[in-house]
Length: 146
Image 1: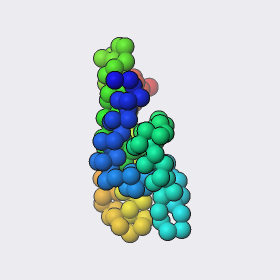
Image 2: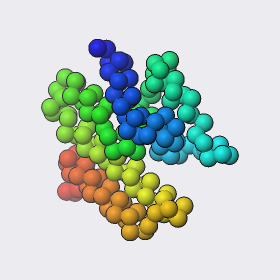
Image 3: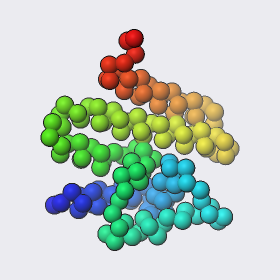
Image 4: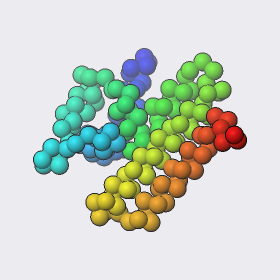
C-alpha cells in the first residue's frame, strides 16, 4: 500500500471518529480558526467529501488539525513509525502530537466558555493539561534547566 493510500485509509477512520464529513469540516475550521458562513455551516464539507472519495489529497495542516480536535493521532503515529530511525524520534513526535492535541482541547474549552457552552473549570483543566504537555516537551528538548 502506498503512503497516499495509507493516509487516505487512516483519514477515513479519523473523519468517522469526528462524526462524519460535516463535523470533521467544522472541527478543522475551528482548529484552524477559519470562519463559518452565515448559517454556521462549514464551507468545507464538500472538500472533505472529495478528500474521502479520493478526488483530493489531504493537506498536512488539516490532518494535524483533525488529529488535534479528535485526540486521535493515528496518521502521525503511523508516519513516525515508518521513518528510518523512528525509535529515536518516535518519543519526540508522539509528544509533539500530544501537545497539539492538548492545545486544541484547551482552545476548544476556552471557546466553549466564551460561547457559554462550557465552564471556566473545564477550560482551566484543559489549559493545565496542555501546559503539562508543553513542560514535558521543553524537558525532552533539554530546556528549562537554564
